[in-house]
Length: 571
Ligand code: TEU
Image 1 (cartoon, rainbow, N blue to C red):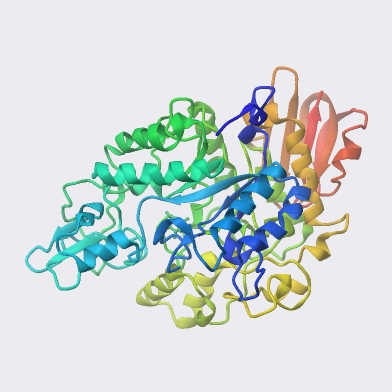
Image 2 (image 1 turned 180 degrees about the vertical axis):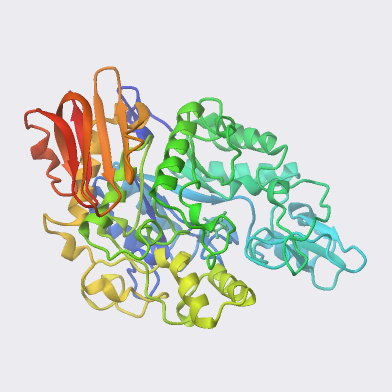
């Protein structure tokens, strides 16, 4: 819960922090079983503190059979033993809070695991009251209730054994959807949330929350593929009536908005973001997918949509415009556990170097709100060089591969294409050192370490000239003016300069210009008038603390080297 310590000069902690996402399986293994765990995270808290992190989002650590690596929960009040115990969790909260690091938990409320006792009871007890906890329908003419398609492939319906009934699953069949129409289930979920708040959790990232409402007609749709199935789109994503559930969730789950909440909600209709966030919205913030999923418009990793820097610019500016109108908090990010590493998305086919690996990091860091860094991003971790499908772990990678083959790709092309966009790229173990298994573990981890670990790791990034040091400077700069960077005005700049993404952030007495050259050609931007500027940071000169004390200089143009990004203070 919010206390005075959390509000400094009227700035809430989520307006003055930089957040960091941990994928616990891959962060640090403390007991050498090849899987990351809570004690591993605890041992790395000083690292996060030194980096300047104020909040950590933990991907799920609850009890789970791990079909979807924890996004399939079998007990909402238990820690999975592969991660440790509840004592370890309490210790984590305690130690993190001592370092002024907030813990944000991942809440998966759209579905449970099929191993949850609610669902197990359904399977074994014909009279089970938990049948009402799930979406269970009779077969129609001996077949599935309708032709809806699961997001993870195939039909969204699975037959209950020894019965004529089917249950709905938006994701894998091991993730049965919860029936939010049932008030008893909703109350149970609010109790669970409050239980975690009482434990000292400071906020939640809420998984796939826009799927909780399903259109109750459950009618058949026109097929959108040769298999006769169809994606129900807005019949189950941001469906009509979802606001009633979200309002209640805020009221009873989130203490009327007093804890920090960030919803994972894709496809929020343009103009509707203000219903979701802001003072009267359901959440503090929403992760925007618009520029992160520009390449997967059809959801197919093997058939990506081409976009260039100008398309990206438009999408980023549009997203910032929506955030501004909505009054919610922005939560800029360019990597997470569902994405490939950002260079592979924004710079396909480019030979990577220090400058092109850092330009996008500077670009997104000063967008409105609280930036999120994904583990490994701060040392420039890259996509994994997949050689065979046997190396993957993620359920959806196998589905995408199968789909690619069914669309006529040969095995090699399917592997290359799926491998490029696979979620497992972000899930390879954190690279701490050049030791075997990258200092993540002493045994072969659950997912291979990227073979580039000898070069790319935290230890080798300790020097001044490193991505890690650039991140430290970026965080210092971001936190040096929370007022402007969290909520200050946002304006696109130099919009007609091709391959330049630039914007200003300002308050009544301060103005920053962030200007990024997203190409390898040098740029020179002529200014309308002579302007006094001070370079605070660029990826060619990132000694922020030294730079901030320098004098302003008068300039008529701004020059940018290949992939250079500059943060300037304007007088
Ligand atoms: O993701 C929800 C979601 O919409 C995903 O389908 C996302 O678009 C996809 O992963 C992009 O490739 C959440 C979690 O972040 C994800 O890890 C889980 O697999 C999913 O929910 C099910 O819980």
